[in-house]
Length: 229
Image (cartoon, rainbow, N blue to C red; front, side, top):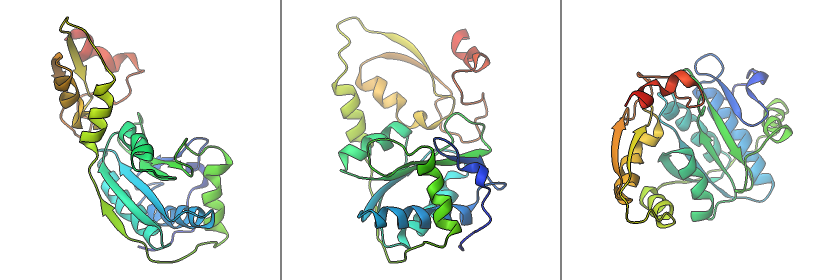
């Protein structure tokens, strides 16, 4: 992996970094962003961070590059692996993290990917706080070191946290779940079973190709199968 200086500035958006894989984003871009991120949090006195990624096909490749960049600045990584974005947010408090990056393009089409960034473990960076990473890269303000990485699984802790606060009463619910083959497929069934809900799953197999419909529930046509069921 190598530093990539000619990164498309348009991917540094108002609330995240987002672009088309192999056009705007690749492993070298992820590596370079990792260097910038690690250098910045190191400069503000941090020495560790948490990283997760969604089930898009490009996410493991970007994850490898991003993590290597962060490690090369001397920051230690807690890697929570393939998770939903809410599990990643849960990790901030559960693991006592002051920063983190989630590799995801949310509801965008499968060819997109990106990075949600937090420098404080309380909320995501936005505006100039996203664009400062591009400035660090452009101005060669990279700090180097040697970090370490630790892999952990917090699925059970998250599921227990979510379900412990939900009381449904005596009447057993019957519901339909459409995971759209997204990352929620990884935990949805277990959550509903733990809540003793009678559920009908559709498209609840994790598949980053999203073969059944686009993964955006705010678009009416993507709810067709759910409504029919």
